[in-house]
Length: 290
Image (cartoon, rainbow, N blue to C red; front, side, top):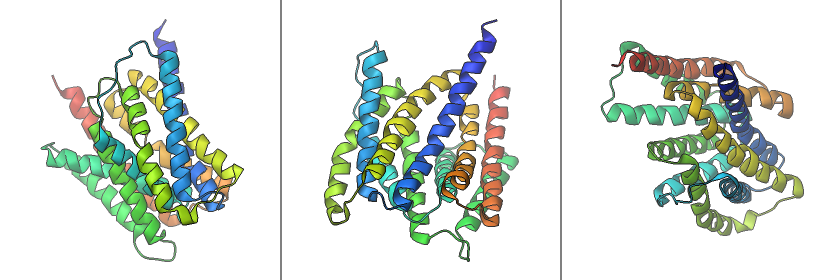
């Protein structure tokens, strides 16, 4: 009888996390689209509030007081993701930005896997190629193409997050490691704020949206995600994240009056469908392994 409550808890935690992750795109676009804050300040407030929230969560719940090893490369990748993410949303819609980000993250991780000797079945190759074609189609020139600078920045954010995720594999306590990496981004964020000081501006709305992105969508979001992962296989964990760009796109329609274009719809089917094929093949191969 204890199995069903555990499954229900995992589902609830997973749904909450996917909404939180999609909320990052919506909160950032709300703040920057309205020019309520500059991108560098949004990044600083997001990472600082995320670091504080994670520290408070660990202080309240952690019994093991051991510290995670320092990983300044991971912190640099986390900062690069966050700063590129913020500047990209100066020109991208929430749904388009989330799709480019997600596609770049997954393709980065799959490419590293291939270079490391991972074997792809023919159906996995078909999925990989379909995802690449979908991403190329999304950003190809045309009347409904996303802004090229924003596209490039979001692709950089995705690659950086992919590298960050790869460095986190095998970490004994990912929540402690994440809290440490958030804290280590602060010198980078302060440097960025100084670099862009001529453009620094914020009102209360922009500042609150940045703090909500850092404290709730990032800090609390990651804490919930690591709790959900206890009940998910690696393949299921990767697969459920396919929902994030979809949630962001429909959230953009409902909250920001954004439009879902035919290009975005076709690209979403190709990118998310292609990656789903690869993940399903991985899951089937893992299930057959002795």
